[in-house]
Length: 194
Image (tube, rainbow, N blue to C red):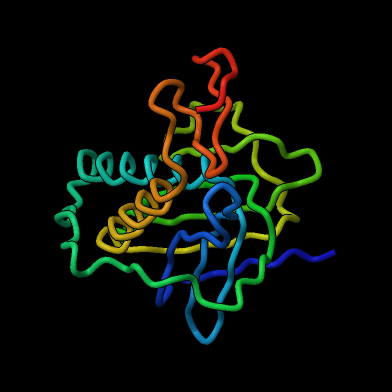
């Protein structure tokens, strides 16, 4: 079976979003451009790690290559619109890859479909260092979503991704686990409802 590479270089819009009520949300990365909309499902922790690693990548690009980083986006310019509908899942993400293209001063994000044996999330920077020989390359026969963003667009993506992750259920003040609307069995209260 042939694999598909959904490339948006650059996209009209690239966001992280959710479908469903808190506690039952499904997380998506969604790219739109050229009359196409592609949505891929992933885990909340993957969205959180992606935002964190993108921030690190921008900082490293500034340090190593002198890339001028934009200021944090103003609150009035934030993309708070819902995901484009219909949200049709193309695939579930198994691996996320990040790179900084020095020639074009853009960030490349690649979401690769989970393979049959895929279990872990891999996030890393693509530098020019060839001393890491134990890096396992994802199967070339897997579907991919590839997006190329400017540092400004990357910063907007990071801010929205963080808002989406933090918009879920509130954590229990004692144990940190998410509170359900019907209550929560807190281990700090020896299993009594809170």
